[in-house]
Amino acid sequence: MNLLGEEGNIFAILGRATRLLKENDMIEEAKEMTRRVFASHNYYKALNIVSEYVETELSDPSTSREVVQRIVSRQGGKPIPIQFHRKLNCKEELLMASRDDEQARYKIERIIEVTKTEYQRLSNDFFLPRPYIADHWDDMWFDDEEECWHCIMIRTPNAKEALLVESEGFGYARYTALVQDQTQLKLEGIPIEQYREKTRSKER
Image (cartoon, rainbow, N blue to C red; front, side, top):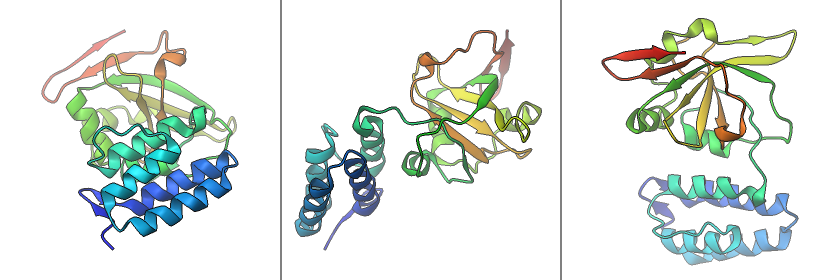
């Protein structure tokens, strides 16, 4: 059975898709999808089978990461709650992390705008030390009394998606949360910093 693709295997994708179906009371469909995937004996056939059930609308199902992102973005039409997760490796794991329906309490202390290349670099490795995280360690903490995450937002210009980070004093993204659509948040008055690899400029 060859269910390995270029960047992983089908099982993580299948697990996420199965949970989405069960969350929408589609138990029998989830069972049928699982049976068909295991009977396919092929990674790309399996991806296409999954897309029939979770409406991934795949045009070129070449990587597991792309499929996971598309599956999670659908989530039965429900937005993903903003919740912080500790010491995950990458955005793919963040997308697949278990969540309840409760929204975390958080306050964005600073917005860091990075290039698409830098955002992808961070998304691929949360343990990668980044200067814009280390430089603003004092903007990030968890308030035990108010149960509130004080964090920074990392985003690219004109993108809806963003990451929230609380480093716990470290120079990497120790706690992370995914924001599907930052345009729905009230961000007025929050300091913004444009980060570049060699030069950084600030504006308020």
